[in-house]
Image 1 (tube, rainbow, N blue to C red):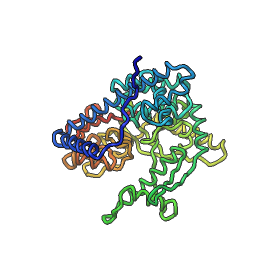
Image 2: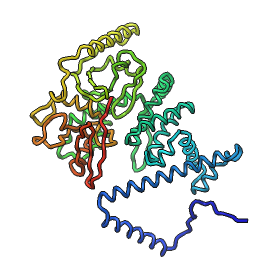
Image 3: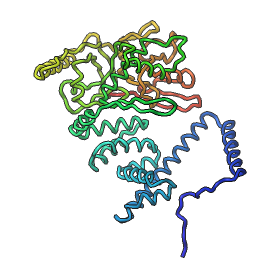
Image 4: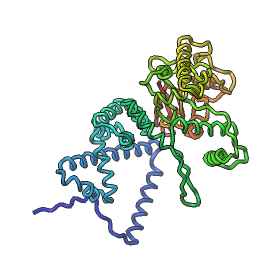
Length: 448
């Protein structure tokens, strides 16, 4: 009879001082050899290859766990997590999560194969799975959403795939999504707890559009009150101090504007298309209708591919009375009529981007509105931070203050562009970022 040890890795024993010192010395030697022999491009290549190996190993592990679970009978499956715990050298609770994760991924058609082939990483796959696990969906709905996500793979980050999955979940059953939102909104709250080193956390959970309003209110105040030369606080410190002052009455909030992108069909009563808050995610049609009366409208013209070609000047919407509901319903009819007239009669102020250029350094308000509609968030690949800076790709005055030479960036990636990257605009309207080692990354244009 032959016995085989099925342990995936040896159990380490306590090291002697000599063995531990030798281990540390070898690590120093490996690190120094890479530091002085690899070019920046080779370093990025090594990082990418290592990630591919990790992803392939993860895909093989998922397949092995799913196969072991399928092969086991009902009685044995009760203890499958305990076997996984022994194989991985982890506790039963962690192993249960690993098992659930593997079975969830294996149930999505093509997901594990895409992972093994390098089309997406472990982080991408788990981002999709987390969104699917957040809501109650049928097996068929989960499979359909997973398949559509694979069909739309185009170099997105895990965060971008999360947003895509969330949008598909809403679209697969809008009525169910509305019911879930109503329940979630009724549970809005603020939580406060202490952490280490004399610190604490304030967490507010509530409707996305209200969170967006808080974000933009703070960002607007900080823009209107730039940091003084002798102010040594970081941006994070300034944000927290402002947050406290606004809540405790030390500062009055200023004027602010939060952007929401609303399809014309949704604004005029349609129930099928979702709106979007740039950088945060999709919004249900019912939420949009509640916001319309307090908003300014701005017409955005797009071509057949959803690419922005012109942006109109903002106009105030008719104000809706607080009550009764019949009056609000009549006002909503007026909104829809006004919107229809706005779209059927293009305003003179709807200028094409080439008409918005300026000879000066500063960006005119109309040109900035066009850039906001075109870029929506920071244009570094994978970044979804709010916009703080309008950047001249070719520095002014060598480069003009015109749409083709301007891009919107967060402050961090504005500094990164100046120090590390070269940015070009491709003929297709994508942003091509080239690193100091020569690696190139695309940020695809944001269609509607």
